[in-house]
Image 1 (cartoon, rainbow, N blue to C red):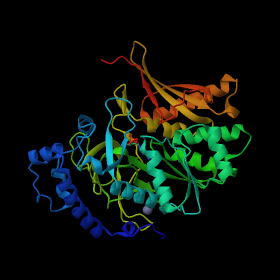
Image 2 (image 1 turned 60 degrees about the vertical axis):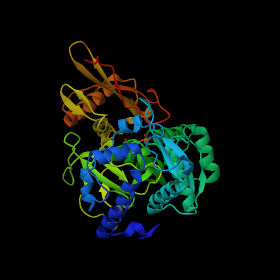
Image 3 (image 1 turned 90 degrees about the vertical axis):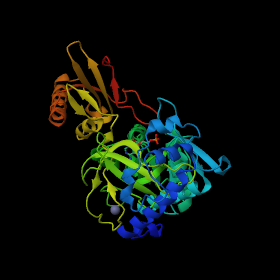
Image 4 (image 1 turned 120 degrees about the horizontal axis):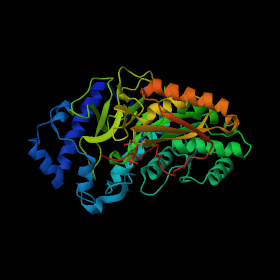
Length: 432
Ligand code: AMP
Ligand code: ZN
């Protein structure tokens, strides 16, 4: 196995040892800001209360609201003149969350990101095109610095503008791309519309993350471009990308446990769930100087994958993100996640790139409407053929979610697109 740095090969004992050492340093750092100083004192956590990473459970959670309440600099644990960069999380509602980084923070983030990319075969000889938004969003500069650390020729293309993306990819022979899942299929379609086959492009690896997608979606993307797609997970509160990444096995994302302590909890009780059970991911940063964060409730739902990975790395794996605790919606008393819908509809070859879920109330009760784009070659005027497809999709959805949705088959490219993360659900039901 070719590795980027030796920390990839730590065994479980070594990981625990590093975690304990770094957790102690982190706790000492957090006491430099009033917020954590008080939190830890209130919880009775003293300088020497942590003798094993398990003792972490006694530390109170940090929530998004905590981070918002401390905006902009309440959580700074160093003098401001030590800060070299800040980023914000991509939420569009509420006050922002800002994370400030020292030079050491930026360096260790770049190392982690490079570790992820190297793990899936990205090398110095590669041409890397970052199709992610730059600016405050961490998917831009965060991944950029990792690619430069490996030594790739790095193209900071930014988000959107398919014509320019395609020209850059052709002119410079892009072999690796970082791209949002919702945008990747759109780009593929754009190439097809130009009369070309995306599979003929030299692209061989795509780092795809920032929003949830299913295995069915990955397979489509891999076939479309004839490339490998690796899931990349991160969140601004924990730097951004580089937190969890799939290895060549494509069977779960390794979380770099020398830099983070991941936990999975029952979102209601706050207690750890058993290995393999789904719950909310909670993360503690272990290397951050500027703004260390303890037990952050990500709201992301996943599970630890039990057992060792065939690649040999001992850093624990989490499953692909199944959704966010906030994404769940309830129709006729049933809890539903958008990914359950995607998982079903993406198995139909007739279905195009985009779908949207509308929740309405027709006066009698909840109505769930799933709008599904149909690829040009299948979108025929013969309503009878479409009607059969419509019925089959509705039935398969019912089998999965136990509610029968109304299914609208719409023309390709007719649903609204967003430049950033995809918005999959519109809830226009009257709030009680
Ligand atoms: P940001 O606000 O840009 O820091 O976004 C972080 C959030 O994006 C995470 O908490 C997840 O909800 C989502 N996210 C990031 N990577 C992935 C991924 N690979 N799969 C699913 N969701 C992701
Ligand atoms: Zn692995």
